[in-house]
Length: 258
Image (tube, rainbow, N blue to C red; front, side):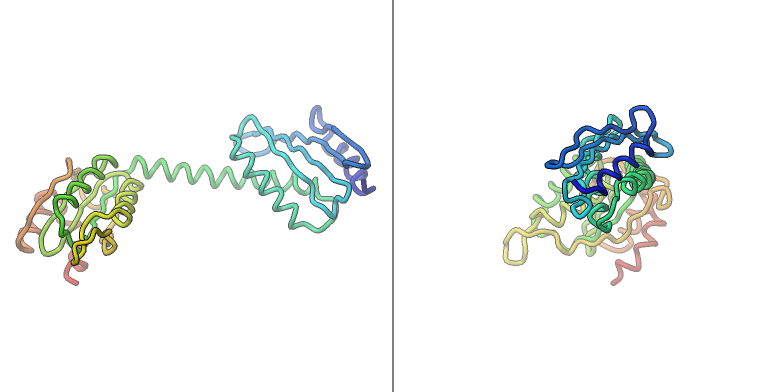
């Protein structure tokens, strides 16, 4: 057990001198030092976190082993914080580092709170906001199977939409953005159609023509998933007008002409 470790523990007990903040659990020449620091971190959420440090005899040339526990965090969150602390310890020079790690944890949790909060808010917004997307399909050679899958996915993902069959094959989808993305993923990973030789194939040529919050694309909500055939550009234009999506149609028109 190094003198540096013994001295560091003495300093730490002076720094974390509040009631229950520091506790020396084990000290031996063979196994090193084991102690616990209980810290309150975070600006908005005051989290009580317990850090268990094991300084082995070769410390600080061997980074400390660390355990993290907290009643305010899940097991996964504690595991992630532990891994971040271990990575941070491994990046530091071989000198007393525990106080530095505890201070780093304070900053890390604050940053994590900010990022997590923003991420959760973004996910909630995506769940609540209704988006509209227009997809372009390359071909439909097995319409019965293909259309049946599109109808099933739209129902499972709580999406509404239209399938326009004509010179251009278009799918309009409305619903949660995450569900629209899942719909697109299924299109590219499930064998939905047949190729020119009759073999089952995936929709690898699908393109997202436009994706936009619904309030900026139209003021109309679609109902169900309806299949519509059209023979001419005029009929397609009229179909978009019928569902109050003329503005959206004007936005995608340049893409359809290519």
